[in-house]
Each structure stands twice: as C-alpha cells, then as structure tokens.
Image (cartoon, rainbow, N blue to C red):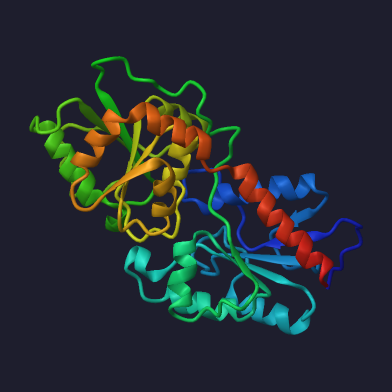
Length: 324
C-alpha cells in the first residue's frame, strides 16, 4: 500500500477527463481539478495512495476513463471507513430509457457521506424512489468553463435578419429530442416558419432526413463556443434531462433558451431566461423572436457559471476534510 507523504490533501476522482466531445462529465472534471489544485489539493484518479476525500462521478465502469466503480468503493470503504465519500448524482434511468442506472446509484449512495444532485428535479426524482432527504446533500447546477463559453461577441440580429436557432448533442439518443428537431427542420423547409434557420451540431440518428438545417459534426471547446455565439436562440428538446451541459454552454454564450416542458432539470434554467413548449416549439420561437432583447438581458444576468459550480464542490470537499 502506498501512503500519502505530502502535506497537500488528496482528492481521488473516479473518472479521468477526456478532451474529445464526450458528454458533460468530462469538462466538469477539468474544472473541478483546476480549482482543487488552486486551493492546494492534489488530484488523482485512483484510490492509491490513500486519498483524504473520494469523489464519485458515475459509478458505471463503461469507459476507459472510469477508474473505479461500485465494487472498488465497497472494498475501499471497508478498509478506510474514516475517509469521506462525496457522490455526485448526474444520471437516471428515465433520461435514456434504461433500467439499471437508478439501482446502481442507490447502491453507490449507500456508501456516500455527502450527495450532490445536479438539479432539484433530479433530487426530487430520487427522493420519490429511495433517497432520504434527511441525509447530507445539496443541489449544484451545472456550469461550463467561462474562459471558453462566454457571451462576448455573441450575435445580435439586425432588423429583418434570419434568426439562427442552434442545438448540439454529442449523443444521438432519441430522448435528446431529435423528433422535435426533425419536425422543426421540415417546418422551415416547407416555409411554415419563416424568418428562422436551424443549426444542428454533434451527432444525430442516421434515420433523420434533414431538409433545411445546417449540419456540423461533433465539436467541443472554443470551436464549439464560436459556432454557438454565431446564433441567436438556443433550442433544446431533450426530455427528462438530469441537467445536461448543452443548454448551459449555449446560455454561457449569450443565447436565451427555448426548452421542452418535460426537460427535467433543464426547466430550472428555462424558467430564468427561456420560454417553454410542449410538442411544437414554433410559437415559443416566435415569442422569443419578439422579446429577444429582453431575454438576452435575462440570460446575461442569470447565466450559469462553471466557476461558481466548481467553487461549491470545492467548499464541500473542504467541509468533508475538516469533519474527518
């Protein structure tokens, strides 16, 4: 067994970051690692040497970047009962139509000393199933890296200019809302929604036959942020999303939100600077076009922040360290 011989406290994170487009957890890890190092911590992606705090992100061992999961945590907890475990819950079965994630998270939660949900919607979802709200927990909404996703230079439409709608997803799962995007693409192609265009970035089901949309492959970082800032309105049709990063990155690039009312945690952001819809986003888009300057002011005033998010997690790690 290797022991920590440095004075710096050690944070062990269960998933290493990935620099290619690969969902929201990876950029989260980059931000967390950066602030923990600024605060004097050492960050590692293993359980050896023995850490001072363990941070669990998605216990599924379904990717090479996942460094330890439920079984490793059980063994670690047995051997190191005094080391606090922080569990970030950012998934659920309802999101992707699966049937195994909720149970895996329940078993992981039993080992945790503190739980963070990435949205109030997700907290309430699990409280209705198995989470005891008297246990130590909080809700911390997602934020993107503000040094990359910033609103400065975001497009302001000229009178009569076509309003550019954008959405982006690294996953092609149907529950990301591709039925709505395809419907909107056809409405624009048929001239039933004049004054708008749609840009789709990332991946999409191969079955879709796009007719009018601008299609761009998966992107991340500054190239993605530039493409977002070229647009005027961010559209999401994702259903039962625990929180997500796509709309967060859009908001931090200055884009007001048009969101599905069954969007899960996304609705919490939409209520601040967006307009909701049910089955057809057309009327919500027209309303957004009419009130765009007002909603731009709202998103500038209330947009999410990766800095605030990372600091909140760092504060919890400090609290857990002090309580050992």
